[in-house]
Length: 141
Image 1: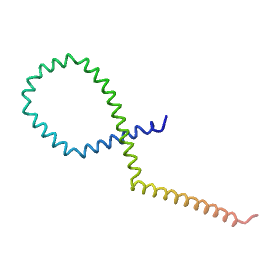
Image 2 (image 1 turned 90 degrees about the vertical axis):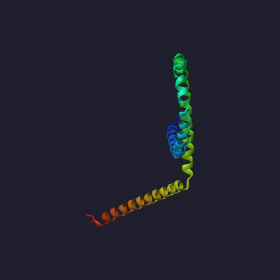
Image 3 (image 1 turned 135 degrees about the vertical axis):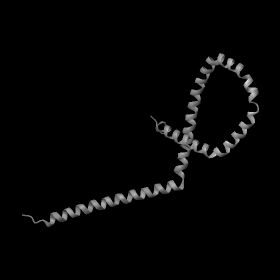
Image 4 (image 1 turned 30 degrees about the horizontal axis):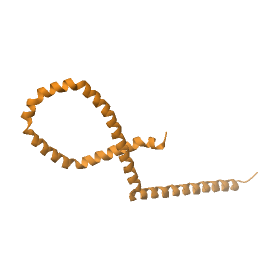
């Protein structure tokens, strides 16, 4: 399996989360617009209510074809949405990788790993030297 296909679910989840954050940030503006839109529609409710019986009859007759059409459409839309989330996530991850904070964290991590390796080598050498000193200090019979 190609590496890109292995990463795709991760990118899709990052893309979905990024989209959710964007929607939440826009919520105050969106809410105000929706309240105004709903207020405008309240006046037309009596006219719409009078049409409901005819609309329901027509919708029931068309239901089998509508359901079949919607099911096939939903599969395509789900695939498109997943791919869009994966693309968005991949772009987001790439931008995070290029950010100065990430680059600084990577540099600090590499420095810490290097220092840890050096300390491990020094400790190993010291332990070996202590072991040799002990062996040399013990009298040979």
